Length: 178
Image (cartoon, rainbow, N blue to C red; front, side, top):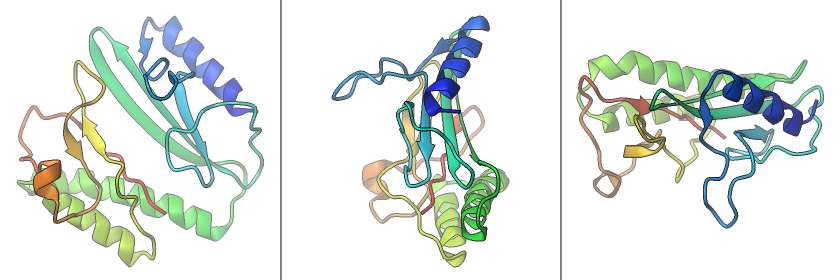
């Protein structure tokens, strides 16, 4: 299957359920042309679906954003295509582990930077690195809201704006691992 075929099926599903795909048309150098971001292998995020055909051994991330009844949702999953080598599987496991760690720690800490530090430590101890410069975000009536949600610790938290974890806050935690 091609990444364009996955995008077309996903867009059809979103529209059949009376939702609005949120990525299509997002302004950049050119408007984003698809309902999903599909990133394969070396692509980190924001891959544009197209004629690329998936093959055994690939890893594919599918990121979907939509709005239903005035509220936004954002979810991404990464899956192997058939059998993958042990290092790729370890990458998937560590990335998933970083997300699960964040979910586990959210009720135990007061500030996001404490969790980001633990996520980064987890990833580095596993022999991988975190992607810096791309972050998660708040989400609600709009897709991309404050606060910014980095998956790594930085001394520049003042610039990014560390934030308190409190009831009612909805965030998209998006670990990205190399």
